[in-house]
Image (cartoon, rainbow, N blue to C red; front, side, top):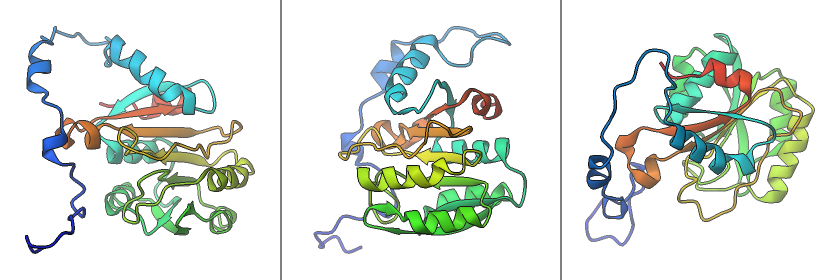
Length: 226
């Protein structure tokens, strides 16, 4: 891109380095202690913070896990609940990193039409009727279109998904720390398997490679990090 243009190149997905917090001083104050096999892999303070952050947007009692970013969370969730060859409904267009992660896990992606308000309910219903085993939705700051779900659209998607309680629902709210639009849930209370992913990479820096994953208890057991 020409340096003389007024446009800003957002294709790389990186935050402005000048807006990121300085972590060196904070980390220097947190001297690590030795951990032993069998101990909790998440610091108690971090777990409490994550649970409190995600609780208002969870459809039911939930557990929390940490993964190495949102894409890692998606791959772990798919492997935990699906088998090679299963179909996963994704937005069309969809973030290439997400598609690649699902394909590496031997899943088949099924594109679902989107518009300015997000995934189209009729198109999602058609994909569900054809037998998709999981649905992946980006509620805010969709990549590459930038659209976010309206409340009306989220409610419509929730009604469609309520008729398919055994379909795994993955919500990739990767931009949560910086999003200016409100979060609207698509997860019905009757859904058996669900996960809400919130990354800190955009807000605190890509090098952290960290995402909070709120999910039902059985899903938490299946996507624990190594």
